[in-house]
Image 1: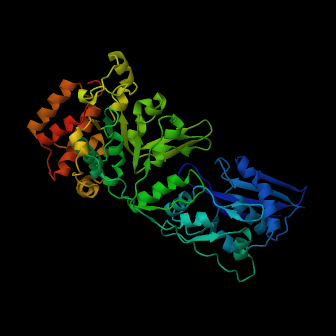
Image 2 (image 1 turned 90 degrees about the vertical axis):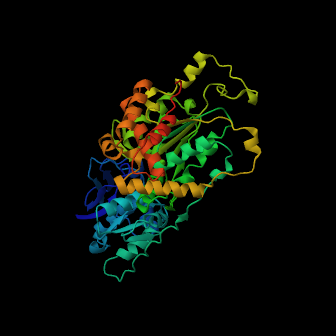
Length: 507
């Protein structure tokens, strides 16, 4: 009887806990048993491993009782990522591999019947977990997955194309040729995207967009069709500061959980997700078996744009309430639980009524024919608790024809982005995070008001019947306006502008 242990990793949400692949070869009735809470994909590895070993020139131990245990036993295992460590475990248990070299590595990879290695899902998450745990083992992955994992600095990542290539580097008693170090995927340059200068008129909406970008505030644009709501939203990413290296790695790791294709880390490019309004609650927040991230997690560190907001299913919209507050989503199922980061910036657009023409100027030749009950029912699709979590609510009206026919004359995105970057830098230096992320306990410290300004906002809050959450959000918006003006203090003028951006539907 002989025993071998090979190190690998499973996927549990964005985490990648260690898995000990224990392989035992014993005398007895020939069999191949795989245990350790493995799903169907993992159990099917028996046939892939058998064929891959034979095609790679190794004799499969048909006359042995093979037992494979994936420990810990209570951790669910999925996908074909354990094919490679199982095959290596069988070779090691048969005494064909150098145990010291095997113990110095971690392996993951799906095998074809010909012994070729196919990429695995979540390679970047595996690498981030290895760095987080400060392991010194070499990470051996299929070539495409290794290139994604090599984007994480401080790790020794090796690329392999076949089982035979990996085995040759581990064969006992030979001068094994080491596997080549993985070359990281080329990093993409940031795409500037559409320019804010293309939008004519809409000075108030552009100002709201600048404030939203500076403080990472959520934004709701309300107005008739064709007024430029979607165009404004599409230009927000071009105003945002670039991603840091750690944010870019986290964003790419989340995207890598959705498939096996390798995702290069973008240089400064923030993710932008714009799901259609027919998306379900599971599509937005994540789910499935095993749980996978939804649109809010794939937009982590970037922008989630929801056009035609009231047309989304009510359950999908209500599912956004907790992530908007906490920046995380926990998906709980009967068998398991997974948690994903979801710190996104929400930008939404909607018409004010079912026909869309409520409040449109008569000069447009369109008149709203919706009854007050129909308008209330349409706007009522957005619950009060959800609206209360949106920092800026701005009305976007049609621009006059003279402005639309004039030559572009507004500020380009690059100029506005400089002001946004300066304001964001003040926030990071002062409190370590954007104003929108300030928790209640820190608002008193960083959003202090003088007596006159405090009386002004208190009077407005009492008159409008605001909740404590809405009052805090108005204070954070005022703090951002002050940062754009390079002001250390929040004045009455800053609060007054913030009040104008707190439009409540139906109010």
